[in-house]
Length: 83
Image (cartoon, rainbow, N blue to C red; front, side):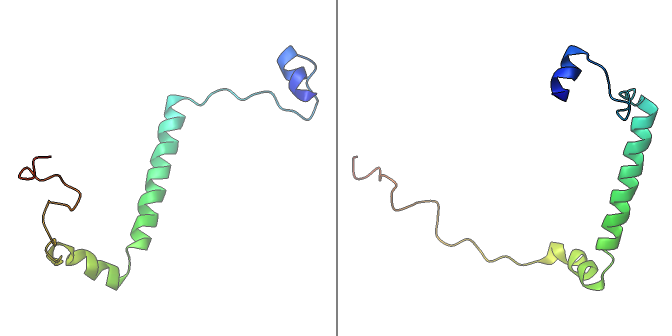
């Protein structure tokens, strides 16, 4: 019922506050900067571990085994078979 009142512009209950004005560009930039600072702080706390620091330091020296096999697969059609 309150949905219809809002759409049709009926009386607003006393406990319902009027809609707020949209935030300004300065407010949005300040909120974004605060969120960025919070994320950077959380990232610093997450990475503040000796083991993680060591893993990050030597990550470029990690060895990965060579790929096995080639690019050819069993369901590929051979050019020699004619079909």
